[in-house]
Image: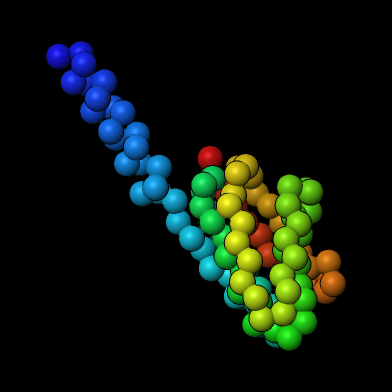
Amino acid sequence: MPGRTLLAIAFAGLLSVPAHAATIQITIDKLVYNLGTVHAKVGDTVEWVNKDVFAHTATARNGDWDVTLPPKKTVKLVLKKAGTIDYYCRFHPNMKATLTIAP
Ligand SMILES: [Cu+2]
């Protein structure tokens, strides 16, 4: 019977990874991130949709990532590290938001 138990654990592990990963969409319209605070988990994907006609960035204050968002484009980032990340736009420092990433 131990063989069967091991198999069950392995199978559950395979299933749990994709089932928990989510894609979170954050839209930028008229110099504003539409979601101020977003709760995510390690492994989730954040997708920034830039609806403006100029470029923005999503720049983590702690230096973990710096994503450039060209005009009218969507850019994805897979979250790899847990933490509370305040981020902003390097071109428009008034644009600010927070991502809390659970392990
Ligand atoms: Cu900007």
